[in-house]
Length: 403
Image 1 (tube, rainbow, N blue to C red):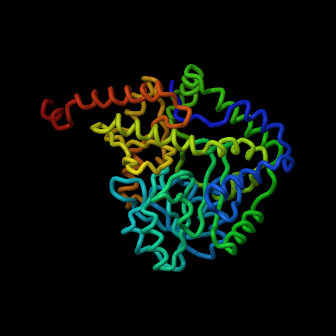
Image 2 (tube, rainbow, N blue to C red; image 1 turned 30 degrees about the horizontal axis):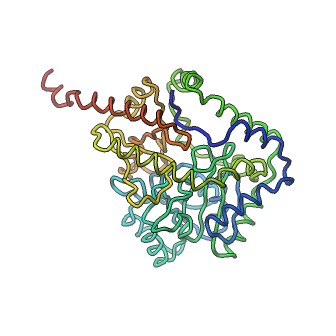
Image 3 (cartoon, one colour; image 1 turned 180 degrees about the vertical axis):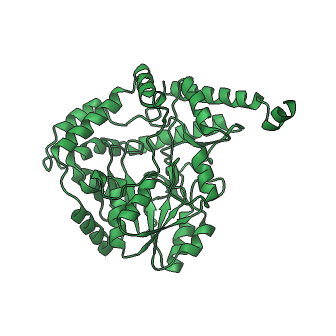
């Protein structure tokens, strides 16, 4: 079975990380330098997760409201809530994955922070959004958790706003066991406040947590063989009838993703990936273009927009299923292709119809740098076959008439 995700680290990487003593190897310093040079940032703060980075930014912001896209990861709403902020929602663009700037503008003001999400690595209209926020006195925090390496007119996402945060969990461009993150802010005073807020909220990761994370990461690597993954899928998903770990709940107190500091051993897993980030980005773009070209014209699902300028570094290839998403998912899984789910249970009120329609429709194809060409072809074949089968089915109207 082709897995829904595959980490970029190996058992050898984990074995080396297990031997790293905190503070002894300088891995965090090296990773911070790599990110600083890549992003052109003055300083980089490494954090235990993307949500931890956002939490620190929001606590340092001095603003009382946070405006988020209505279709977004619940961790964003969680971080804002734990930072003591009022959360407001802005509807997404019709047919897209990011915020509708026209829906956003009335919500902006000098008491607000807007979280400008580049969903799945597909950039939002960041230049227009920054101009709008500047005109209304709102701060812009770029949610670049999924868009490290994505560019807009040659400029990297994460470098347009007043601050930005990144994520290194296992679905992202660079990943570590099992989460990690970073924050940047061009203004030195804001960055110092972010760093202080983060230091106040975190302590060193205990050895037991390190052992647990390494064990979980090793299990993730070991389940990657086709037969092993099929067995895992049957036990974890098919038997339970639950195909995603997502829930509509958000934490009401800080979890370890907020409490623990990023470690030297985690950084040791990331530095090699940063050394080859250009190759990782190029592979992601090639996979995205291949899927988009091969699946264009399907009628039972819609594909995401084309990366015309070849500037994006997507972490997902999201399709919108027309009709019963779970039935579509099960049909693909029966044929040996697993899909991921993104934000099925969003926290926005039901009045945000476009966002909830998207949440009901999105499935993510297997999409990671180590996806083999044969696996891509197999995924395309399965999707094409499912699309043909659904096209041959009579519509609801014709069934009703015949009955």
